[in-house]
Amino acid sequence: MTCQHNKNHRVEAKIACFKDRPNGFMAELRIFCGDCGKPFQFLGLEPGLDTQGARVSIDGLEASIAISPEGALPSPMQRMSYNINKFDG
Image 1: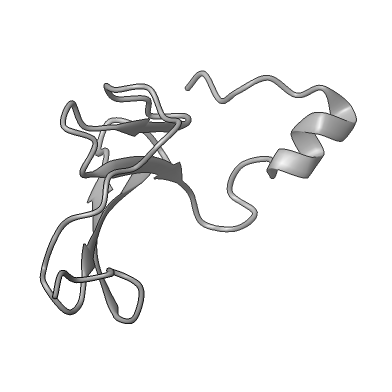
Image 2: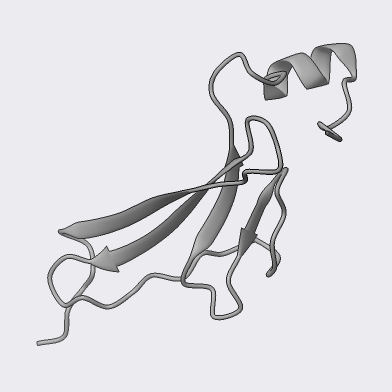
């Protein structure tokens, strides 16, 4: 019987730090079926690198998401409310 990939899952996460950018961090995520080990693909993200957003690797198997310590940069809600642009530093 083939694996249904719906019971157990495993997540690998790494944090990358950008030394040239204050509060510049990136979460790198991979997800696997916990039963058979098959990797999951991330959908709906453009491939590449975006230090202020989210992207996916060319094969779709690793998502990279820009993160920052809470309060270090405006939150998404603050940017919507006050029309604050992305951090340019």
